[in-house]
Amino acid sequence: EVQLVESGGGLVQPGGSLRLSCAASGITFSSYGMSWVRQAPGKGLEWVSAISGSGGSTYHADSVKGRFTISRDNSKNTLYLQMNSLRAEDTAVYYCAKHPEPRHYYYMDVWGKGTTVTVSS
Amino acid sequence: EIVLTQSPGTLSLSPGERATLSCGASQSVSSSSLAWYQQKPGQAPRLLIYGASSRATGIPDRFSGSGSGTDFTLTISRLEPEDFAVYYCQQYGISTRTFGQGTKLEIK
Image (tube, rainbow over all chains, first blue to last red; front, side, top):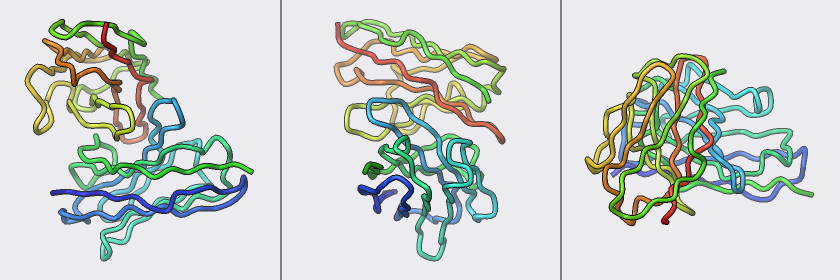
């Protein structure tokens, strides 16, 4: 069974940094593109960042470009999201999601349960 | 960026009825690049439909997707109590990927 487990969320002050992790199991991790999708309280879904199976190609939404960096360690079956210069509007549940192919511009067939990030002073 | 607009915002129906949810795109979307997700309160989204009309693994056949170009539809043929949730459409291109704002399907 494929499982994605996010961690690293918490309360951080504006301007601070946080690194999210997503541990994958039950799959050959390097064979699949991965994404981070977030959902602000009471709002809809926003695709934040994506990365190809090899890690050689990435995508970041304009709202986070230059502040967030997606990466992966295929030897550890783990996806990361480094979040810097955090703002109040980054407050959300962050979901890790898997694509069914190595490319990162695709639908997501498996989702983690999410980790909550709160940016507040 | 392609903007997806879902309608209606809220749909109130009874179990056993047919639900029709719409997703309109600001530019033409390849039909192979449109997906639908279901989200229940406190849960992660679940993939229902990909490629506009292909059901994901384990999804009941009362769920169906259709459409092309700028107009797409998710149909639930006969609502079960567990179908009441929020539904999102999503498009995924090489340089742009967006979600619709969601349709809340509530019990009437």
